[in-house]
Length: 531
Image (tube, rainbow, N blue to C red; front, side):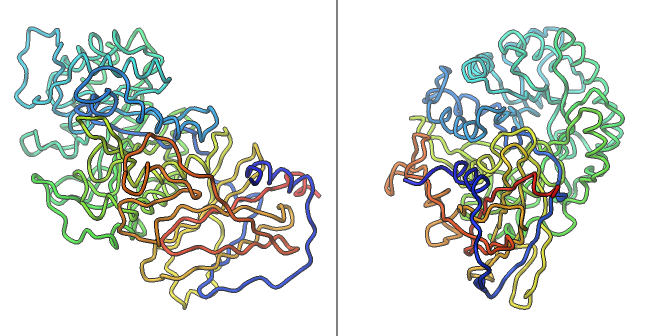
């Protein structure tokens, strides 16, 4: 069996092999990219890949099956451990509990007696669910963000839930934040018109009430969970995130939501042209321009963060044949790099058991399938590795023969630099349906790199973009077998990789297969740059 990737790279740095100049293979089409030691982007926290689950799905996700409040589903715990294990002991996924169920929530153990339950609050949250979350956190170390309703005009209901429902049942050390509300720009529970001024007037009352409820703790707030501009007849408030951050300094985490494509909602406009092709084309140039570098930098200087509090491929539960396919895997892999490069601190993948979720759980048995998007999350965490000083960058690309059909929005090149172990990883996301051929990627890494590298891949069986199973990460799979798509949470098979070599100038050529993710890992000698 081959040595591990880390060992190979360390040996390459200690004992560099001088190779003669030779002709490198040529591809058509071909991309050429270069890297310099100064090419650093924002640092990426180890908790960047996080999760989001509805209050209504807590028992389904973490109970032992058939509605049990007993903790915990062992397969789900193993799948979470996979993500955390790839970070080598660093802080792993943070689980946000909330969503539409938070908007409509009513705590069944409410101690408020002076006010009746508002008609809008139709989704009961039991104390048993809260205790299950407390046991989950205590037994695994998983940290939580807990979303409370902001729909009732009076914040006393949420204040009561935090004081008497959450804090007595979940150790505060496992609570990252209390989130206030969910997608206020979509509050169709309100009577129109519902303006930004209406919202901020209400959130001031909630801010005061929840700060009082949390006074004995150091737990901060998260919000406003604005969801975007992709729905007709609804307000677009994304450009108000800086204003919100300025007006509400108690909110340490400034959150927004984003889905790649529009799904089918009875109360919103349905999908018009949502297809695999349109999903792979997301994001379009300019779609993420609301994430302004100056705003992100200002938040970080204030020890605050911009987070994607909820997101996935297709909204409103997804669409069968699109959001549950390998197309969603490729979309998610690229979107993770897109957001991390812009300084977003967390990407909370939303849901269980809908068409876009990382997990699909049988409510009767508790059996779990890993969703297509889970593979993208596992890829990102394996590449990150958990070090404190991991940064992401965009290699400088020379599109030397773009006339042969390379689409810069569909074949993306990213880089991850780890100053701890001296590695640089180049990631090629090939999601171009119109370029169904191998693309040669020439990496001009320079003389300060190891002469050998390792190539790993995220792929589907025979490059099937519409497949709903048959995915592999570094040659490993999660399914128990070809006729059993459930999983025990453990990776099956030995990890696979390919060895590649550079020329004497430190130039590598790797093959990016169509509709896949290809990764080149090389070592960097940090002392070389000073010579």
